Image (cartoon, rainbow, N blue to C red; front, side, top):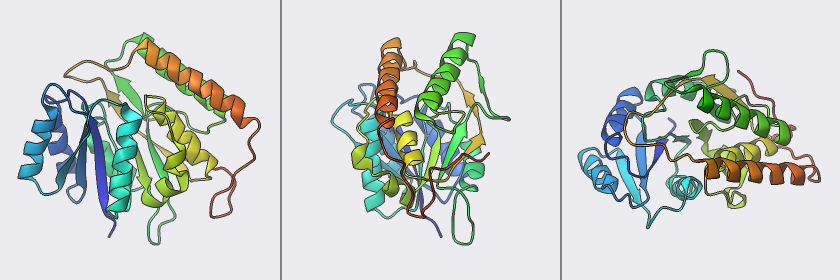
Length: 257
């Protein structure tokens, strides 16, 4: 049987974390949870430790400080790959990613006798997906950012900036994580671009994204501008890069829905 771990980065998420972990454990009881805390000043790390003390399937990776979402995920991916997990989920800690979508996402992965996908994107912008409690400006920004990344990098996904994702361990190895250097929110596009260039089979599963109930969003105009600048640089560089193929000998994949 596949070993699955749900990676949850945290920074000042003490109010939302207990409820999220409880929901994850209820929806996928055979999965482990790894909380990755960047020394949250609100005490999220201590809350995570208490959760781990009460549930052997919950563990905590404490990092020295806030170094960005990408850095937290890369540290976590290295740890869970070394631990021998077969499936790795990335999920926000603020409750915006509903754990109730996870069984359907996991069902679309490749496995023994099941020619499924290497990467599953929890997508807001495919039929059946959506967002709740977002103002029109944020909807426009998210759709525009995804469309821009999709166009300049020739990505086949409708939701290029989605943060709710499932990878097989083999997919993470194929991406060559040492080549992923983005630390901020551009990390999501960076990972997807590397997965696409590695020829991985990517699918989008519709989800409904819910605005956080606790705390405040860490998104800012500066973060968006930085991410778009990086995407532009990658797109220009890709014009001079050769076509890449997966280990299966397939060209870069199209996304199935």
